[in-house]
Amino acid sequence: MLVLQKITHLSLKLKVFSWVYTIAYATFIFYLSDQPSIPSIIELPLLDKFLHTIEYAIFGFLLMRAFKNSGFNLDSKTIFSFSVILGFVYGISDEIHQAFVLNRTASIIDALFDLIGASLGAYFLYDTYKTI
Image (cartoon, rainbow, N blue to C red; front, side, top):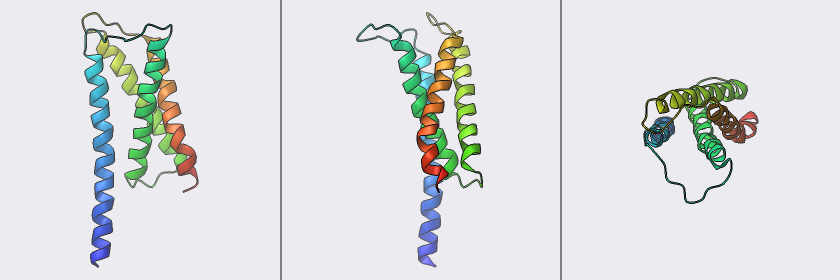
């Protein structure tokens, strides 16, 4: 009985912390978007698009993991779809948010790179979860 309680407790911790990390990362994205400017160490063409892709790939990965660890009885395709859609919607809301920040603008192109990133990050775990 004690082993079952420990497993249940660990499962609950995993569920909670998966979402805590995901929400904390979303908050970090919001914080970055709220800055009037973000200094860049180097200037490269399309660096901004690459950074959007990486930023949202991490977010897509975290979303995929959080949905999987939540214990919902969903197949991998559904979890992948939820992760990508939520990542994209958050990316759109992030761009809208930037429209109200001094020296920042909203960009549909940036939102598309957010979608690409969320898709890549979620897909990274998709194959792993597909076999489970």
